[in-house]
Amino acid sequence: MSVDGAARLKVPSPVLEHPAMRVALARHDLKTVYARLNHAGFSHRAIGAMTGQAPSEIYSVLHTGRRITSYDLLARIADGLGVPRGYMGLAYDATAADVLDLVGATCSSAADEREEVRQLLAHAANVTMGAAVHDAARWWQPVESGRSPVPDRVGVADVENIEHVTATMRVLDYRFGGGACRDAVVAQVMWAQRLLTADRGQDVERRLHQALADLHNLAGWTSFDVGLYSAARSHFARALEQARYAEDSSLVANVLYRMGRLHLHRGLLQQALRFFQLGQIAAQDSGSDLTVALLCANEAWTYGLLGDAGQAAKSINRARDEFGRADLASAPIWVRFFGEADLTALTGMVHAALPRDRKEHHLHEAVGSLTACLSLRGEAETRSRTFELTALATVHLRLGNLAEGVAAGHQAADLAEQVRSVRTIDRLEPLAAEAAAHPGASDVRDLGTRIATLRKV
Image 1 (cartoon, rainbow, N blue to C red):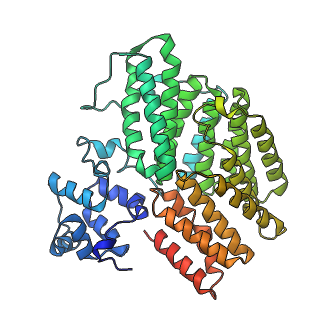
Image 2 (spheres, one colour):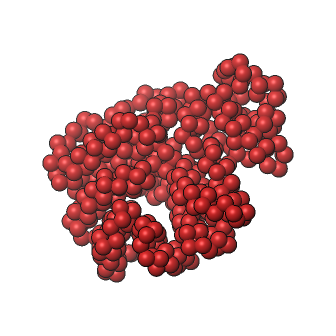
Image 3 (cartoon, rainbow, N blue to C red):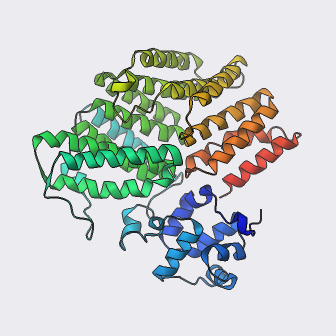
């Protein structure tokens, strides 16, 4: 792919949201930024057209290591590439890159990741079961110099502001992906956790910790969505502590659910199962049927990936029973997203996950459930629709329904280009593998080529 035409001067979100690109932007490492754009098909001329630089300047950055330090030029480059200025620390003070975890965050499968997961799982078990010692002094650190001041005394209005910001950012995450709001969420965390140093009454204490737990939970989720896995684990651990301290079992369960999803995505199935099972303990204590249904449905998906059809069936049936009893209107805000579409989607994912040597009817069940859930989705649920179209396309190809698979696959790719989510790109891998299994079909090959281009960032 070569990108030179003026009408095509738009960098796809997967290119901008790749963790390596995010780190390079945060460091003002334009040599790496431009090299990755070259790799994605953008010529020196195309990059120059976006940034307002001459091709010779682009060449100089790439081949002589020239550094750009001018704020005005960096801002122009950010605006030209369609990068939020916060990605380059231009919307904040000089410590923004470090504060936002971009330079130091790990986003690859390092050798020590399993130890990191083991420690988080042990910590989650201790906090969930009430055995952890609360180290309150850690909860408000670090306090950065030069940041916006916090009030001397925290009232209900301050907590309501945090709750409102969290709810607003959650909507942005669902619709546009974690990359659209992650930096703003983390910046809000850095400010809001400093409220723990302020005076407050007993009427505010629990609600403040609850609000901070939910905010850290969202920071972890959006970090996960853009591939910053260590940063995600850190936020989830803090969210779990805060939720447990606030004695909110439903929120504890929700954090554990999100921890489970992170490790499910990483292929750490047994660890994911443990997080979901811990979450069920907290969910049952909360009395929230909807929360229990959420945990059971995700447990079923994990059992499906493990090839245990019997346990998968038991878990998804229990999820349906709990969901049928749930009062969605009174459910906590952090679990209210889990509706009929999500339960139907997870039912389809369970059937799609079971090994291929099982009866073909599982694949037909998957098609039915995934098709049904898409009909229930709103247009704003872009990321969820991307996941479900990807899964539907994969199942259709496995069944030999090539035309249907190609159509769904291109729809998924269209949406993946719009969402700032590394996760959506990762989830295209099974579809790419299935497309490669049909080398004789040109339309399937074209789909495979398109997916390979999306994933080649």
